[in-house]
Image (cartoon, rainbow, N blue to C red; front, side, top):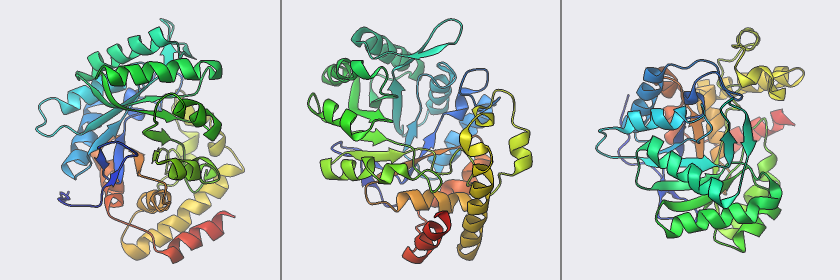
Length: 321
């Protein structure tokens, strides 16, 4: 795999971090057996995926404490052990779980502090580059949780602070307390809702946007089929996800076929086309791309450099309507 020496990078909001257009998404690396798993996952395959992405020039990884109930963070730490140049590491708080693996939301200050310390231990880091509130739940505790993140930044436990899955009004409430470095919203050609309100809000207020699920959990890779969907493991959350049910599934697979055709004209995969569609928005800093093996990295790594023409983007948008 070719190593990209120089590529376009974008600064994330008001931070000092210059990000590559895509980063490693470590959700599926949490493995199976928890509420939002992607089914079983081999840790060595995850580590090989991280190494392949970093060797190709990717300079950031996004994970969360809840992915695999702590396991994804541990896998990231293993992958980074002994690496000469450590990438930026982003993780998240607010999703907490009990001994039975039941997940709830907490934004109480003491809970946020405990979560941060636990993530630092699992990741084997002295400081987290970007610490994010995963979900704005419970809504009434947003101010308390955000104040706790701002204090962690003052203490040097985290370098920058952001939010995920917040709407504009919730971001307004946070901005009264401390600046928001970034928002993490879902954004894809299948689910473009972020471009209606939150992406323009980010652009107006100098907030970075690192979008997740640009390939809509695999639907736009060009390799998804009805047969694969039917054969998902029982603990793969996608079995229950609305986008994987009819009539949406047929529309999504049809869109993936268009992306495959556009990609074929340019020597790119459908997944790279889907990622490029998300990156084309001027408010988007970078995209989180899930990778479960070194082979999967090969199918998306071209998104570091590939960009859609205005005509290709219009072709996709016309097809979506």
